[in-house]
Figure 1: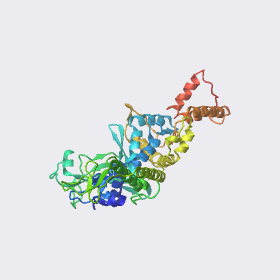
Figure 2 (figure 1 turned 90 degrees about the vertical axis):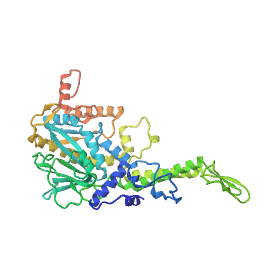
Figure 3 (figure 1 turned 90 degrees about the horizontal axis):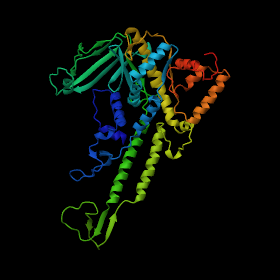
Length: 475
């Protein structure tokens, strides 16, 4: 059924197959895949009385399974309680990044990038405007990267090119001769500039001219854009610039669930308004319409029956849908935990085991969007600080070491319960008393739980508080 729907989506030969597949996956993620089907689900007959097949009808029930799994996994990745701390041995670097994450709302940017990138890839753009840093997540449907052959993980340029109507361009302030035509919009980022081009009518063979009014020279020495491949494995597009989609394996099953639930709803409606069949000489007064109020009248020895769908059929559909849901969630590592299995006494570790599939998915995404993208953004910021005077929280930041070592400190998957915190405290106290860990390491291990942002400052407060009894050891 998925391929049948895909065949109804118009193909544009001016775009590569990669763009088409990413567009289709975006439709699945955004819930607009069925928009190309011409009929509503309740439309059983066309204008001429012909039967409309199910494959041409939009389901009346839509279970956004793919979106749910993507948002659940991304919440485990970059939500407020799961966003990693950008750590460094350099105290100045660590303090600047702590303020920068809040000012730039970097967790929100990374959430958007991870959701957009679930189709296969995403891009994160960095801009420096009047000394302030800004980040935005971009879809890669119409982006084409060019990599350094001597450093395959380094971008040389990224080109954005797609079609737009003349009326849209005119609304953006472009001088368009014919708003009814389609135009190519194009811009390119490289190591020295962000270059915009004049819109060009589709079908024009001449190269586009540079738009000097909108082009900007940044002179950073690197492309201010991070390209993220979603997951390891074969991509749905077949392009090496994309990773595997987070939900591709569940699309067919999701479509089956939508149609089965729609059919079950249709059956329940019919059961609540059954057709009355009366065996009598047929009436010729007007057209017969299905429903108890408009009986189907037939001849041959009078009789009357109600034509309805039994409740066992609906129950069978729901059981089938439950099995389909389990299979779909298992195929893409979704959350299959049932609320019936939860009790108030569950520990954080028990909850992790119940959500192990989803945690595995988020753990793989940590590599792509955390160790890959977020650290790459942090290094870009260190390099940009050498070129521009950056302003964070309204103040110019001190000079940063471009070679400073930076790492990510990730919090626990599940917030610890009171019992978990008590056990952690006892374990840390025992290890510190035995001088097997330092005070700094002990506090660092619980910093995310107790919202400790500045570990050295916390150590100083502990040392200054005479009521705090903590083993004093080196570190």
